[in-house]
Length: 516
Image 1 (cartoon, rainbow, N blue to C red):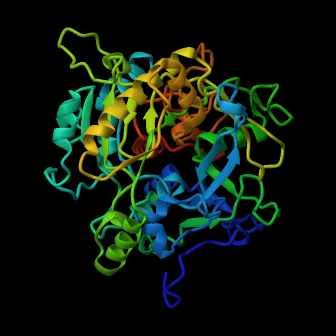
Image 2 (image 1 turned 60 degrees about the horizontal axis):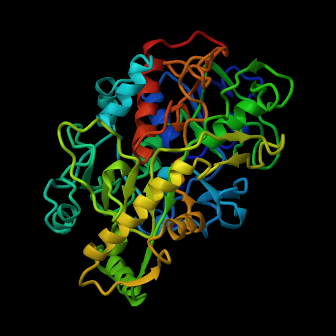
Image 3 (image 1 turned 180 degrees about the horizontal axis):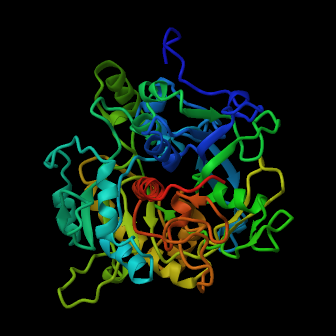
């Protein structure tokens, strides 16, 4: 951001707080959380200039040059303004009972401002399973339009520059030009769609849905406040604002249940007292995609050359996302040597439980344990306690052994001629050595979800919101982020979070609530 440019239109917390006047601090809608979903919802609800919207975000508006460089903006570990980082509970099945680092987005755009920019919807079958389980209005045909509403495809269907077809064919997996094609095979290889604009810059939901021009145009009725926790400002001072219609939580799958628990909504033994509503599902069912991987070594000089190419010519590796290719496959289709067995039309339908990526780790989708988010303290500025319980099911090791064998096979084939040297590998192909390698290298992939799942309150795994995203038993309160996902899907969660926000906006507009 140039020192001579106009500042982004942030509303001070004092100016957004109730002061006794007729309008100040009074809003039609208050959105808590300006992350991936919150920026989308703020845009859609403020389209009508007669509707007053307040967007509260605990982080800041990050506007620096590096925040839009695709590869640089993904390196968030050293930037305390980009992400929250804190340890999860020790992993009982991880080497040395080590604790994995939890990471969530911080600032406007949330995770979409720091993630690897993959835009994957998941399989139609997964959304149809939601519908089959009673989630009215959530079949793939009913949500596909909400995916498309936010999309502007600016690439080309030709993928001939990346050499992906031969690598896929050698593994026995069909290649698709569009990994989001609803008709793509379940076991498939394809190039990612990524949230990068025509100028080669990261397109987070902050930059796409709340660009400075739009925020300035709507600043009379859309107030964007940063440095605001759900209960206090970052300065510890308590501010008050009132929603005449609804409050919508978009704080993400970790902070949203934390806010509910701090508000007395959740399991009676976990909430901050007094208890306002017993909802056993709040914070439960935490799911993530388990990651691990083998590593190859490559010259560091390449990175210096590529950074120069990006600065000087706007081209090269720094223009690219962390990974560009995905292989989705069910582990049951991988033989003991790591080769993929081609599927036949008579085979049973099995959703992929592995995603192999050409970076330094691979993802494992379901099976995933159901664990929890709970309060570490009653201070809203503290990070909550999270237990991921990775590898608590012995079946998870069997899946990851298949993944390790398959990725070695793929790495040898895809790396031919690229001067890659083994850097970090299992000691051998024995089950014991593979399990030890998995236990030593397992990590979160930051795809958290399902902590306020959409399901009936009396479901065997109790739900928190109904099919219109309304919190059970609490009037005029909704949730719109990946915490409402009923069961984890085979996707990077940016696109589903945007879809959820788009659908929530339409649900609200279709039946605007009466005054609170």
